[in-house]
Image (cartoon, rainbow, N blue to C red; front, side):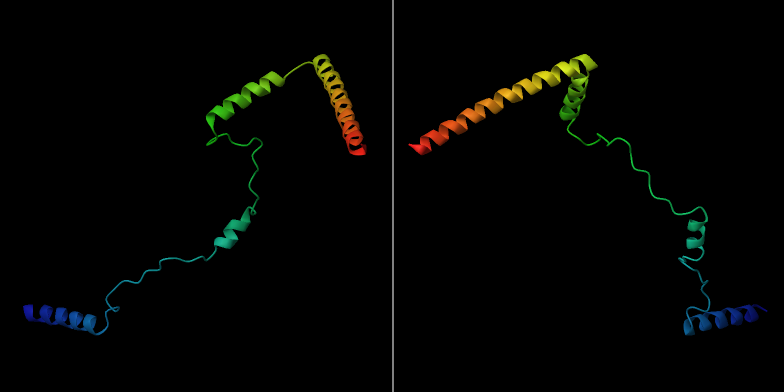
Length: 111
């Protein structure tokens, strides 16, 4: 009676050696089926752009100084007008100096 089971086992083994894939289970590793459909169900959207640039990874000393500089720039409308007037006056002085230097150079070249 044990001979019958033994012969069946031998038959399975011999068929495996003849065709190795016959006894193995088949499996599918990957498929892209239905993925495009699923992705487009809700629409493919553009990523949202950040409102503020991340300071992560920046030089911490620079970031700290930048914050202090921004706070120092805050001012009222009156102070802003005063700064603008002072800036215009300074620009006039620089233009006058440059004009004088240009005239002096022309005089030197004319000699």
